[in-house]
Length: 73
Image (cartoon, rainbow, N blue to C red; front, side, top):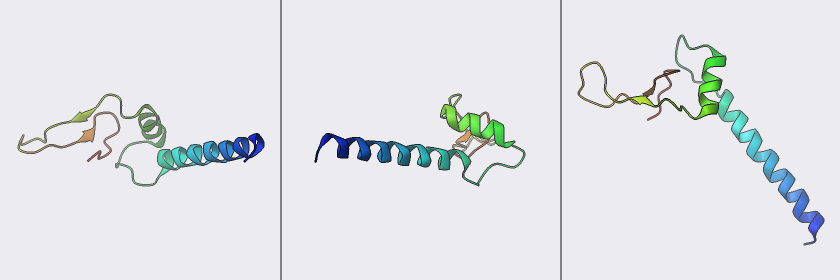
């Protein structure tokens, strides 16, 4: 393969990775009461603020995001 083939393959691979990331940001399941902009920003940041580790009874991990409420388990 020559250099031009490598460049074209790199462009397509980058485009495919970007499309997969956008698909992750916009996939349908979302918690009730969470607006789309908040959810997209939280997913973009990688759920930076972390999760709730315990439910109200304290018996098992909850693993829902603190900001958007998405289930991260």
